[in-house]
Amino acid sequence: MSIHCQLLILILALTLDVQVHTGEVIGGREAVAHSRPYMVLLERRMPSGKIKRCGGFLLNEDFVMTAAHCLACSYTVLLGVHNVHSSNGIQRISVVQTFPNKDYNKTDLSNDIMLLKLSSKAKFSTNVQPIALAGQGDGSLPKSCIVSGWGRTDKDIKHMSVVLMEANVTIIDSKECKKEKSYCSKGETGPDKGDSGGPLVCEDGKAYGVVSSGYLSKYFYAKIPDYRSWIDLIVN
View 1 (tube, rainbow, N blue to C red):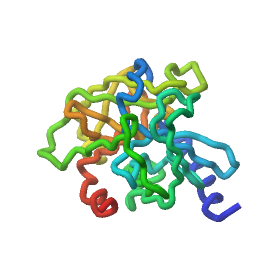
View 2: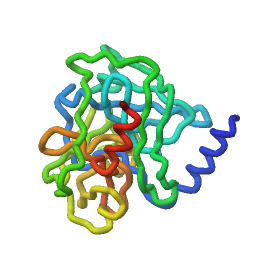
View 3: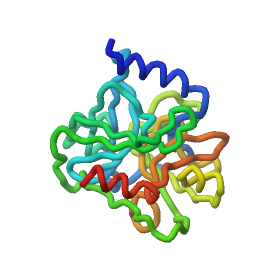
View 4: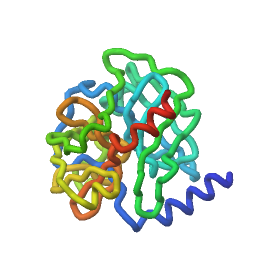
């Protein structure tokens, strides 16, 4: 086993009890098939050889964005997915390089954002398209937003959703979230364990956040506008 994978096991053990990694769209609905062509299903090969999943989203033909806590030994990006049991038209691309934010904290999951460089270019189509990112803006909060993913649809169910689900969330004004360079939403509807890395998409159709963590019905999203300089430096 590589040193990288040994360290990964330790990191996962240390972070497991700190916060619940998010990943299920609770209280949501099935998305219209391929209505969110930027969505990425991220397969993560773990040190044990087991495959786990995170969400992600396509920025351009070369890069995908996800959460930094979606740690793995290797990754495969799946594009054009709606039903996970259907392989028709799906693009499978390996990841050649990872760029977790240099200030990512494994203990409190702050700065929980990562870029993945694809080993070959994504082929754009009706079902595979990039999403624009929110700019630095004036600091005002986005209002109506949506999260999406293939995680569980009920806290009593262990398996993932077969189809892409989505749910509306409302961003709350929170000093804690601003300090942590995050957006937050609160309530019974939202992500939980499994949809990590997926986008928070708001009223103008741009990605404002990255699904990060949740605790006691409060959900955290890495605030993309605060990372635009870092993102542009790597992507360009």
